[in-house]
Length: 116
Image: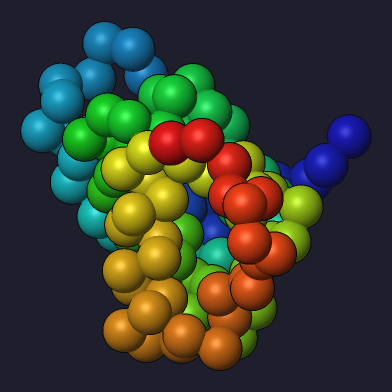
């Protein structure tokens, strides 16, 4: 079992994002604040949200932008999760990494890009 981070704010943000009854505006506001936090457990929770949102919703787009910001700030990506990205989430991550940390974008052999 993974332990939760000591970052109480990060835990609260994730609670809002995982609350099905939270207003969409509150969820989007919480997602915009994700980039200011980090940690392995935290990223795993963002991955779960992106998967749940099927990488395509506005919430997924904002979460993906925050994730890309975390990766750019930390100078690394999650090489196991990156290939799962698709749709608007992938576009968002590529745009942010392209602007802030293009060296982190994995090079892929021709014809192996996952479907969007």
